[in-house]
Image 1: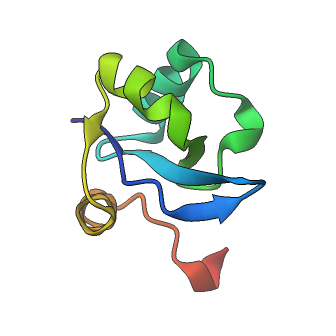
Image 2 (image 1 turned 120 degrees about the horizontal axis):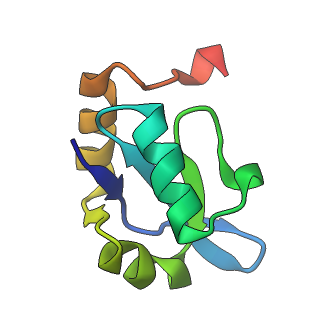
Length: 87
């Protein structure tokens, strides 16, 4: 059971964004996001979008830094992944 954050590479609103996910449950993910003070509007079906500058803080709270490939692999393995065609 882990909360994961990937490499920020998604540009929007003048900054880069990363994804924050759980490889165990949405409950774990939401609890972590609440502790980190992430706004509910940053949740997108199976992940939170987080700005690059928040990553050190998220890591200090216990999020594991992983590559985008590893994050996707573990999210799919958890059964929590929402496929693009189902969005």
